[in-house]
Length: 376
Image (cartoon, rainbow, N blue to C red; front, side, top):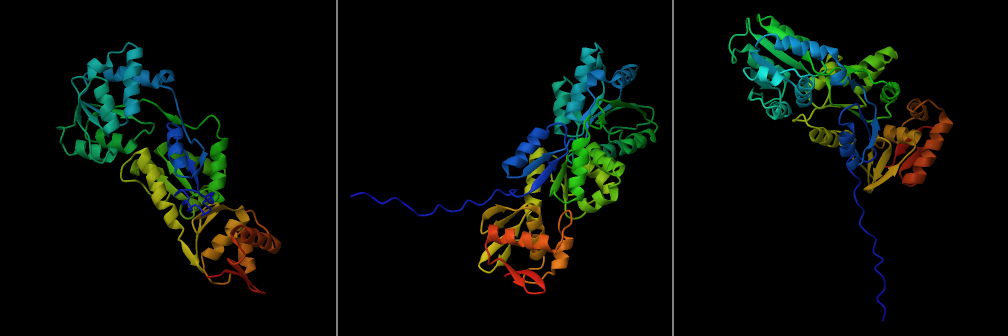
C-alpha cells in the first residue's frame, strides 16, 4: 500500500525585516559592507556615494603638514580615525620621513578604538581615549587640564576629512600651537549623477531611509540639493517621510545644523547602523487589523498576513493614504493629490483595481460617490 504524499501547506515564512523598503547608502568607503548588511535584512539598496577620498600619496598638503610636525618636538597628538592615522604613518614612511620616531616622546590620544589600534599598530603608545568615541569629549579632556596646561605646547591634530574648526579654534584659544594634519580630504565624487538622482528620489519619497557614515557625506548631499534648487524640499523630506540614519552625532552634524533630526545607534559601527535601520524603519508603519487580516504598508510593498506583496507606486500611494485613516472614507480627489507624479480619477481607479488583484477584493471598499476605504 502506497503512503499518500503529505499535502499539508508549508508554514509561511515571515518576510525579512527590511523587505519592501528602499535604503540609500551615501558612504564611499566600506559602502559594499554596509550595503550587504542591509541587503541581508531584505532591503532594496541604492548606492549614491556622496564623497570620495583624495589619495594620500597625491596630497601635497600632507607632506607639508608632516614636515611642519617634524620641525620641532610635539607634546600631544590627537588621532581621530584609524584609517587616517595609519595612512599618515604609512605615507610618511614611504616618503622617508621619521614620523614614528618623532612622535615617540608625545602623548598620543585616540578618539576611538580604531584610532587606538592604528596607534599601537604603528609602534606608538596610546595615552587616553574617550568612552564616547567623540571629538567633543577629546576636546573636553584637553581643555580640562587633564594633559596639563596647553599654552605654548605643540599639538598635532589628525583631521578626518573635516577641518574641525571648533576643535582647532578652541585649542588655539588656550595658547597652544596647533598643527593640523589633513591626512585625507573629502571631495565630491567624480560622477555626481547618482547623488543628484538620490536627491530626486528623497524629494519624491521613493526611498525610505538614507544612511550616513561621515559628516562630509551629509554635507555633500545638502550641497548638491542646494545646487539643484531642492534644499528646502530635501530638508522637508528628511524631516518627515524619509528616515535619516547617521552612524553617530559627529556624522549627523551637518544635518542637525540644517534642522534635520536623525536617528543614531548607541555605538558608531556599521553593524549597529544597520540594526538601527531595522529597528526604526518598520516601526514607522503600524500593523493594522483589517477584518480578520493583518496589514502593514511598507515602502514599495504591503505585508498581508505575513505575505510580502510588491505593488506599483500608484497602488502603494493609495493604500498608504487609506491605511492612514483605517475605516474612514478617503475622497478620490484626495487620493489623486497623493499619486506620485500626478494623475486623475482614472489613475486612482486603476490603482485600486491593481490593489484588489494583488491583495484580494475584500480589502478596499468603494463608497459610491464618496471614495474608498479599508474594510476594517
